[in-house]
Image 1 (cartoon, rainbow, N blue to C red):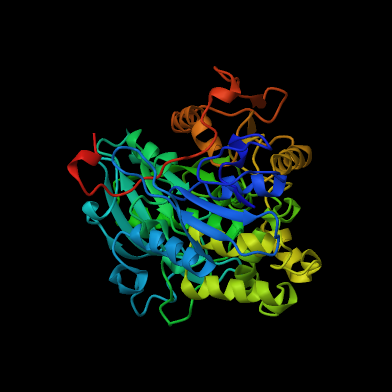
Image 2: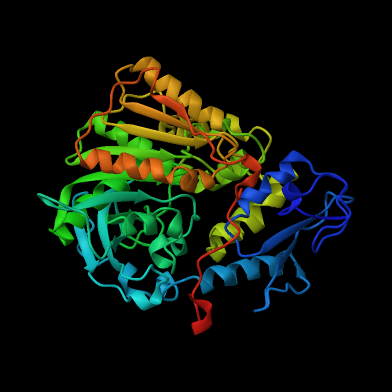
Length: 502
């Protein structure tokens, strides 16, 4: 019996009439959670045979006619599913593969440039290749950053320009955007996608509010090799490394564009929320010129404490970064044989989130991705210990936002990270906003008015008090929770006909 798990949360158990699916007889929580994992895919569905737990996944792509009618789903087995997802990702690229886009090639002789140094810049990218808001412009650049171990590494980034930037005495106000999870491969750079990955969820909105958005791709996403030809691995969920990428991107952007202000605020979501928090911790270790504060939305904190199957998928995705940081770590020590083959496939075909969801979900649910004792691996534990956020000193204002119904990064872990920080460092300028009835991605849109005002206050020079009884707040809903759209059910794509735009 087949269950369409991207609609399970919309219907009660036992409902017999569901669109494009057969009768649902049960809805286990671990299946319900996957709706959030699939939320960024265009009308995509996974089917699981509840009568045969060892069966293969079936992936469907539904197309919609101009009249709004949805034809019957075309189902294919796993290999075609991966192909469909991979084709979708390739269709989202702005200018072909990273490997054929000369911008992403690092010039010779730049391997020893210091961190924060501008390596190359494309001042005006061809905006027609992207799906940008009208009256915004795009630049791309490559700069030097540092890995988790402190090694020099080139990283790509973009600058999204508003038509009329917010100005202050020393230049245009800058917001450094730290994106959420998109993938592990060089083909997964947001600057490589037409909609810059999280589009109107944050970067587009920031630019439309007049901020110059400086957005790192993170090391390993975008630039494939350094100046000496060494492959660059993306150190997934290594928040201190991502914080390096964020801070050094702003420094390099100022070299490329002297009209930018020295002052900047960091905003990040999910993986990028961890990067934003880690930037506040980095500032405590060595003050960062111009840093005004950070916003961490749905942040990654203590990754290994998340529940299954999410933590298993995250653990698999962190393996390349663990191997990069600790050469003695071996994939075979934590992966099952099937899981190792699956992970090798993902890395070989260079798929991003849509492809990764296809490949990793089934073995994660069936216990065939990682070995039962994988969390006890000493390198896994060490990687998590040095990359997690919370319980360390921060310097400067930090706004933390998290949805109480987040199925991907557990809300309680953020509560623990906040409490650990302010208990050890009671003078921390930390504010915590709780969002009831809100999951992972919607925390960005649900709190947008709050963090936009918060950013403006930082540029206005308003102080944030040390943590106190008023520093934690809960959003109050204007309408019943059931009236709000719970998840994304749209994506930003390229219009090919005049009637497709207002």
